[in-house]
Length: 430
Ligand code: AMP
Image 1 (spheres, protein in one colour):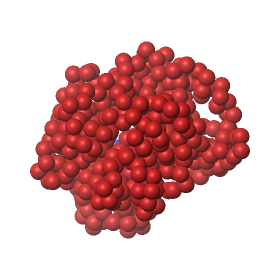
Image 2 (image 1 turned 90 degrees about the horizontal axis):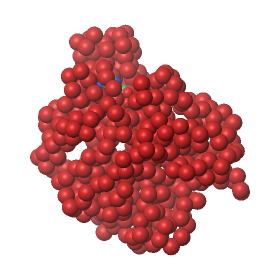
Image 3 (image 1 turned 90 degrees about the vertical axis):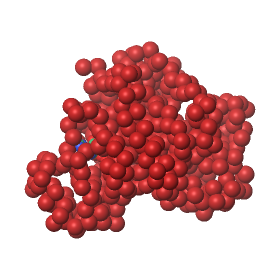
Image 4 (image 1 turned 180 degrees about the vertical axis):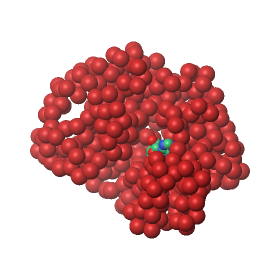
């Protein structure tokens, strides 16, 4: 099979790495990819993965490439091309593609769509309201005592959520998004949710339109600094499994979310074939969904795909073909930890083009994989080329050992201004 993977981050490197292990693949491209992806080879015939200089949002360019190379399966990593309708475009042109169509991708591209869906179909979520009018929004925020999350409806690079502790903060957040348009047209509508207290975890489920197969638990670390301080980021590290749910509780939680979700999709005519990633708060009153994403988490993919034992080509094909009910997902009992190394200043402004040293030494460590995110090659040298630079991932029989190995690899790697959290997975060990 000839595969095309779309995207350039750590998630896409993890997807490419896992797909490359499949005996079904004879050739693979990644658009646009990164320096780490360009170093991967297929297990079946040792052919290198080829990076193609096409952006993830260049839908006409990607379609033309897939047609020209007669790609058998295209795998979409990020949310933007899904929201732009890449799956619909490829399907209309007779090409197989993994990732939800535009209607189904609304679970991520519109927070108002998701909130309305959850309320209509009985999925546990926060008390919430949706508004286009600032005065009404403020009245609702007042009923929550101002303690709330104010969210831009549309895609805002993961930055469209403002957490407020007081009514004054909520008023300011509402004005910034609805009137000041800090997030552009993504903020022409907002969702205000009551603030939920609890432990936040990531769930993932692979779906084929009728069946949803739940993954084990994982936990991300969204804030930039140790102790969950600093600004929100795309994610500074993950680990799996997270010990806050027993196996039985995970099944129960998954059922509470996925059963009404599947019924709701059927009732609303939504054919979701791809990955559903609910962000869940474990509150005193039970688990509640705070948002849905419609693709693999980044850096959740890095820990999940280093634990997955199935052939990923077979799983994604079953998701596209509607045959997931015939597949059993198998997970290693090992724990996996991913520590993100970021450019100094991230998630604010940061410099690019810093040489990275120590990668060969780190890569030689056993049960360790250095997934690249924002990297580029200049001659023989790998340079930083983004905010999140590397996802240093290691696995072992238990979480403390996996964590120690991940940090051992981090210690081998150097670049000017490198920043990373030193407390990834620490909550689980308390
Ligand atoms: P979202 O993009 O909706 O996942 O929000 C980004 C982050 O804001 C989440 O990962 C949570 O840490 C936090 N957050 C969002 N909604 C709520 C809520 N209702 N209560 C508490 N924290 C929230």
